[in-house]
Amino acid sequence: MLDRDRLVACLPKCELHIHIEGSLEPEMVFALARRNAIRLPWDSVEALRRAYAFGSLQDFLDVYYVGMSVLVTEQDFYDLAFAYLKRAHADNVVHVEMFFDPQGHTSRGIAFDTVVNGLSRACTEARETLGIRASLIMCFLRHLDEDDAQRTLDAALAHRDRIVGVGLDSSEKGNPPEKFSRVFARARDAGFALFAHAGEEGPPAYVWQALDVLGVARVDHGNRALEDAVLVSRLARDRVPLTVCPLSNLRLRVVDDLTHHPLRHMMEKDLVVTVNSDDPAYFGGYVNDNFTAVARARDKKLKPGEYQGGVSTVSNLGM
Ligand code: HPA
Ligand code: ZN
Image (cartoon, rainbow, N blue to C red; front, side):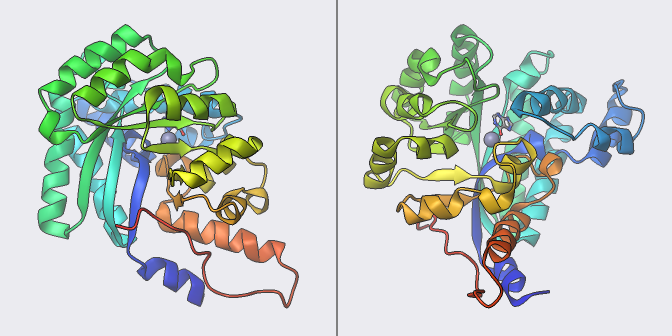
């Protein structure tokens, strides 16, 4: 192992952008499908892996929602989250804020309580047995309407002590943050921290709306903010963190090559950036893989003799 990779492995890290349903490895998809007698459109783990050739966010989401259909019981949600937390612990992750998509489950007839009970039990047990701190952020699916999000918030109020925040994910283009202004205002009044995916595929205007209409504390992805110099100054001035996901950006064609990834440029612009895995089972790597992939891409970009050693310094939330 290179010194750099060893350094990445032993650094304590936080993960702030992980969709727990995106940690569902193909082997677990098939094991849970068997356990719950769910029919899948793929006949093997290999066939499912072959479906992981995405041209866009939507291509990924089409597979992601079918994949999560194997999650039925509280035990399924527990097994999923505990497996991820064990894997994150092996990467020396010490703090996780975990997204989940309740509407991806309630729309299939799974009770909201089933989802939250399983996930939160895994977080509690992982804290006790592994020492990793984990909390839950409930995301609204932005391709659905605001009334659906409002009903989801109603269900979450009974679990206010077990859900730290709300977020916004799914198909970005054509679903601007302002579509969810009322439900985010209610979530704020109820005491939830606020987050939103913005600027992954959507324009800088969506990042402005996430900040000024929704009032988010962090922007998930935020890559396209770099197209707007005034927005970059605003993010830097207010120290709004971007949760950047390099391997996700590569797999979803947000960037064509990691040597062109904007992470370094973001840091040069004095933005607060964090490195995260997004949907590690689908995008080819957990958090350490993301750090080493961007560091390796940087080495490739430097000419021979220019190698400076060490991992890029990536600021986090100072926890
Ligand atoms: N973007 C938007 N929605 C998502 C993602 C993502 O990267 N992963 C899971 N849901
Ligand atoms: Zn995401």
